[in-house]
Length: 104
Image 1 (cartoon, helix red, strand yellow):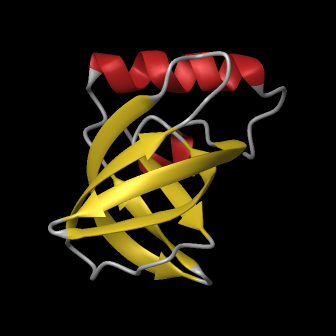
Image 2 (cartoon, rainbow, N blue to C red; image 1 turned 45 degrees about the horizontal axis):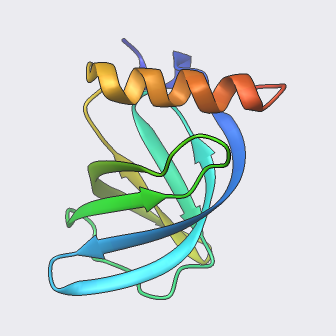
């Protein structure tokens, strides 16, 4: 599936993340079935670094997703993760239902 065809949703959730022994905080600002984008991050992991993201979504329980830094952005970074993970699909569907419009 083409990554650009996956619906992306604007978000605004507090997030913590772990990249190896480093830990950071930021805001999840975009979410899709195959990736996420964070802004206002406290540390900037190198491209290719494995990152575990912990996102706090109300009223949904906090969730955890693991991906790899695909690129740096202005004040943050983007993650890619497994498109076919059923848990990620449920998460994106839940968050998408809370947010009225996809970004694409």
